[in-house]
Image (cartoon, rainbow, N blue to C red):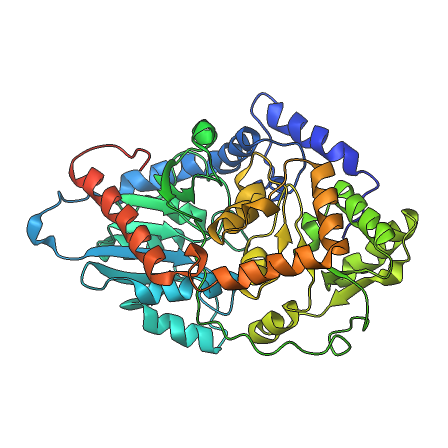
Length: 442
């Protein structure tokens, strides 16, 4: 809701709860957006969050007595199980669908384990077609779901949810597959006992941060995030039809409002003050809009210069996104899908990474499209670069041209190469398992 009166006390409150002798539970997802909290503290939060459930799961695991046969040459394809609540018209599905369709079916057999609703939309049908088997485990208990995964002899179970909304991480705690992987849905560790690997890249998780993750790093060569090429981009609508003024620079951030912080909003208001006629284009969030306008007024900026964009279907959203002159990232929880969508339609983005996975994704994406010069180190550089791009049209147009020129060859949008690199990680995980070796960075 962007009610920030007590914002400065939240970091100390979270730290105090984590530091108590037995630790008090805080939702790990919430901590991703808290400034000043480290990846190590996020790890501690995840461990505390799942502690009691891991104890309960250990009792159930003993009863289930899952055992996994040794690998054999005649075993056939490696069975991949994708576990999610989001097999529908959801950001995760939009990012992943083309990679699923590009999997090498001579090497892998794909199983979906869905516990989310069927929204009846086109993406749901497309997802069904992308898997060899699509299993609805929504009505199952965690134990029943684990039994189903085990009966299907899944070799690598890939969780696409982590600690996001409506997750069922307790299924992972029952260990129904010999290898379990944290991928795409949650930008952080799930803590001990749930997954063996986290799929990432060397920018999102530098080697020195390995101790902050319970999982071993499985590194993709460019960005960990997939993004397809087949998403249609219509012609941009008129500015008026998108609710924008006919003239003036358009700063944009379509991240969810819970990612906004007073420090970042302060910089945005400085930019509005220093770039006459500019506006800040945000995603509509009815419960936060009044508060944000008031915060702008407090900083000497007319609240009407905040323009709120309604939620739209993906094709319409991509079309309007072309009207953004410059996308501004948040911190410490930055843009993920919203960043790759912006880059896909040719909208440059400025980001300031921190030391957590959630803060570094946009930087990873910029590197994967050949624009590392839009990654800055501190708040002053963030303001300076954004101001420079807003007041130097030739520099900005050069960046847009470079971005659009790179799009056909950039690793971020090379679905086949991404799928082969992802499969190489799965093969190496499986090879280590068959050799009797414990999980390790690959």
